[in-house]
Image (cartoon, rainbow, N blue to C red; front, side, top):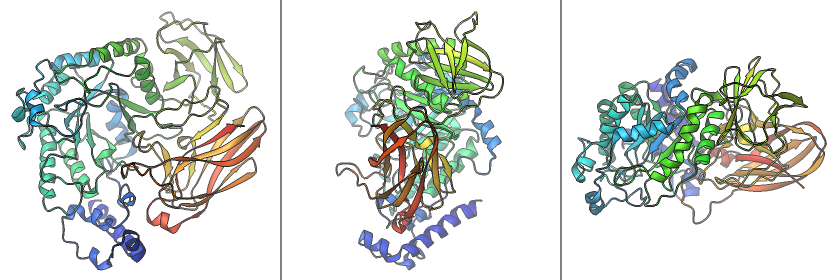
Length: 628
């Protein structure tokens, strides 16, 4: 539906400009003439951005146009088949590598280029290490924001062949080594390029068309000269010049050259339905009942690129993130930054050897596994294959009893996955919990995996319960105290057409949330199971850059009304379309007796300005009941 895809966007955005009229013009101290939209004579690939150019900076991104879907017209089943290899792999190795010195992602001087001679680089060794550590696919930076091509590009001399003494094509060598080892291979490509003379982040440049053609040519080089690609991972899409029309041309080129490759949602602007999967960065979202494809990328070393130190995360951190991503239906793309000599950091490899060893024994619970049925397990994670559940236990119960909340399905057998004798573990019921009797000391290293075979497909009651341990402050999430009821956006049941769950962008920018709240008829609800009488402080965390309107939160027959006012960004914060400023508000106190409850949030009013600027009522992150 190419004609209607672009045509529909133009009509909708034109109507939007006409409706906003002088009110939007006054907001920007500009005069917007409806006639201006009819005489547009610039680059046709900038039409959609032109029609939004007089909106505030925060209202020009992720709004207006239809999403750039990964493969238009395919059915859900067709997409599942196309994505299966990628989705089953679970654990990807992200590699940021180039002549950047001490972690810098941007400027590259001639001095640095002349020093970049990674003679210790050995593609076969890299792939061998990756396989030993448990990775199932590799994605490497072919071109990053600095504009330097790490491959032999025929379209520029700003590449590793022309500008460094290395004179070899590491992308080609790595692609060949991956093919020889049956390791799926993919590339990262930045559309933001601070080196190319024709690049600009703004619209209206007469030269950008040449840069656009250059990028299309480079992507064609990568997809025709380097073998099959498991993934094409775009980045740098948050600027005005990366328009939906340009993104669509790239999508169409990829589909023409390699129809089955997986495209991150950064092909567009990370909206709902964009690309093939969501790409939250440096955090793991609370997912709940959401079921889109997603992949979290995070750096294991101290920086995306090598930063001159041997600092890195722990093996436990890497394993937990892998298990968590798998348990919530996602992939984990973990980054290592090789040294300028072409070697992975020894300290990082030594730590990750433990993860590789764990996967040799417990990989059955990860590779090819699906999202587990539990929304939240404080002591670990859960993955699923049909009627079999795998519980990865990270926090060992001190009393030897592992309580699995809300699992209603009858159990056939329970064993440790690592136990070659398959000695059964004893199970019992305690209220709504299944209790597994465990040894007082964990029998295996790192996370112990319990394999549970059920009589049928698992059914779980995921009503929120009081936290036994609380949630630590991390990844731009505040601490949630012990005894609280934690209701993140992903656990909500959503009613309506436009309100939706968003997987987020980056921990420092925008964690997961409910957004698109522009209809008064849309609302959200959460289930709670209160097992002990108590009083709680009712808190809500949200963001909004304009006055959003008002809502009513209802729980246990009590009503809490709240007016959503604009929450400005920190004055020192960059005005990025990815950034929002979350703030927590105290709505009051509530007493709850034992029993089951529904908490609902329904709009009372949504300001016209908030709708016109695509902000809606609010960007809701979570609701929390904190014990008083």
